[in-house]
Structures are given as structure tokens and as C-alpha cells.
Length: 523
Image (tube, rainbow, N blue to C red):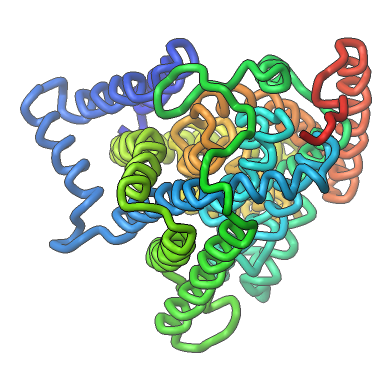
């Protein structure tokens, strides 16, 4: 159905229902069922058979275990249990108390996950889950909402990964560029060089990172984020992702009173070191020529995450035992850790299912076809950015958008104006990240919610205004780029508009006395 607008119905239906009803699984179910029905002529039995094959394929592929998916699910469970063990032995409480003495304001506290998110650029999954879990005890202590933590995590993880060649994202994109060497206007340019030339014209990713900095330092609470911040600051609690209810978020972490800071630091450090080591090892084994880029291109991220997670869990278990934690308390802690990750796991399973249905519908190909006709050259970067954004939003996959849109964008640039080649490629990357930030079925959005332990739809709704503002600024930049043919002018226009927008938002924040702009005393 790649040549029909009907391929848009399931994703639009699912996205619309998610926003209106806030019931993620129900909305995704309706989108999945409608897509299967369209693919099978509304015949019930073939539709059910297709859905069974898709769901089974999540766990079993090519006659064996689908390790990519199963290991990601296993990592989520292990991470939840690790976080619970750290809490049981008192590590979270001790770390929060230590941080509270050093971060005396909410601004300083929020800068911690923002900086950590920029530093851990190796992989977005790894970034989102580690930063969220490490930062949560600290932000809880200072009355920062889980929704704002999730926004900070999500808006640093993917944007920094897509700007760094030494990352899983950078390696993937470089490999795609390397396969496009025969495209007119691309000859003589290597994959790494092409990637580097797209960084200055990836307006959305650059401005998204700047926006996080402005949110941290100026207290820019826009739309629903203001409600969550006021509620967290007043001690009113946040929505509990596991129960769908409001739960207190005071920052008073339970656990052994004898717990030490190292009970948190060492398990997380072990997880990070083991994961990076496993990524290097798996990448080196799969590479014919061992270079930094080839290693990252061939690394097995799911396997590496699970290996690192198990090592971190074992270290956390050791410290829990060393603090005299009994079997009953350990059992309760482990089970609570598993339960804390179940909402994210269910959403991820449903998201993978609808992504496969959408792929079979050909939604991405239909959207890509909309830009393959006769287009005014000046509008090409802007239209490419918008189409890539809507494709990523509706399909829930930025990497899938890269795979479809990058070759198409290169062909369009080659046939119209080869000078725009890297501008339109950068527009694809930027649009994919924008759509990823807006999509409730995006895996990175789900991971960020899980890491921050924020209700998933709370995160989607509170991040959306920021993403739309950045997208609007980026769109003006791409229009200026198309009109002038200069990526530098487009970036300057976007930055100037962004600065003016921040000035307006700061004035509005002062007028309404945003709680995020006010310092808080350390407990």
C-alpha cells in the first residue's frame, strides 16, 4: 500500500488516540489491528495470523532467538533489578544526600543529568537508561519532576549521538553514506567526511542541545511542563508509571541506613565499563579491519547492554549482601525492580508490533514519494526536513527514516542542485530526530521514560512543545538555507530566531514566576 494514502491511517489513528485518550496500549492496539485489517482486506483470520507472526518474530527470527529484541528486554529487567538493589542497600539515599549538599539549587541539580547526557554519547539506549537511573535520586531530592528529567534525558541522548561520529548512530549513518558513493555529486566523498559535513546543517539536533541548556539555566517551563514542575516542587507527587496513579516524590529514598555512596557509584561504573568493553569486543570480532569506526559500525549493542547490565547487577547484589540485606528484602527489591520496568516493556512490545505493521503498509515509502516529484529548489531542504519528521513520527523509528530518506534525498539533490547535497542529508537527520522526539511509539522516547521512571505519556506531552518550537526554528533555518544556498546563513538565521524565542519565553517565565527558575534549599 506504499502508493496509497491509506497507509497513513493506522499510524495517524494510533498517534491521535494516544494524545486524546492517554491510554498508550489501547491506542497502539487499535493502530495495530487497523493496519493488519488493511493489509488483509479486513479478513479476520488472515489478520490474526499475520499479527501472530509479527509478535512471534519479536522473539524468534530465522529459526532462532531474536537476540536484538530479547536482549533489550532482558537489559530493561536487569536494570530495574539493579536500581532496586541499589535502593534497598541504601545507595540511592546516600547518593541523594551527598548530591543535595553539593547541588544547592534546582538549576545546579538539573545540570547534572544534562552534562551526563552529553558525556555519554556512545549510544542512545545506554545514555537514556543510565543517565535517568543515576540522576533520579538527585532530582527527586530537589523537587524536579520526573517529566523534566525524562525531557532532559531524551533531548540530550539522541541529539548528541547523531552529532558524534564515534557513536552507534554515527557509525550507522556513516555506513549508509558509504553505500551512496555512486550517487551523482557524492563521488570522491567518504562516509566520514559526508557525516562531518552534515553536522553544521543538522539544525534540530544542535538547537535541541541548546534548548536543554536554556531550560536548565533559565527555567523555561512551557505548557504542561509547568504543571508537573509546580506539583513536584510543592511535594504533590508525580504520576506513577507502574500504577497510573499519583505517587509522592519527596526524594526520601528507602533503604539500609548504613548504605554508602559507592553502593550506587560502583554498580553503575561496572555497568558502564562492562558495556563499553562488550561493545568494543563485539565490534572488533565482527570487523574485517579494526578501526574505531568499523568497530562502532559492527558492535552488537543489545548483547553489550545485557552483558553490562548483568555485571552491574552482580556488583549491586554484592553490596546489598555486604550491607546485611536479608533474602526476604532482596526478593521484594528484585520483584519491585522487575515491576518498575514492566510498563516500558509492554509499550516497547506494542511499539515494535505497530512499527512492523507500518513497515508492511509501506507508510515510509508513501511519504518519501511525496517529495520525489517536481519541487522548487529553494524549498527542497525545508520539505525534506518536514517529510523526514513526519515519517519518523508516524513510523516510530529514526533509523528506519535514515534508511529510506537518505538515498531519496541524495537523488533529489543530485537531480536538482548538487550543491545542496549535504544540506538535504542534514535535513533528513534533523527531521528524523524531531519526529523521534514527538512520537510516543519511538523506542528512545520509551527508554527515556523508563530511565526517568516518568509516566510515558507525561513525557511525550511535556516534551512536545519544546520539540515543536525547535522544529519551527529549524524549519525557518532550512528555508533560509534553500533561498541562499548557504548552510552557514541558514544556521545563523535559526540561531537568531532561537535567541529571540528564548528571550520571549524567559519574559513569560518571569511574568508567571516559573518554579524552575527559583532556587531551593538543600534538605
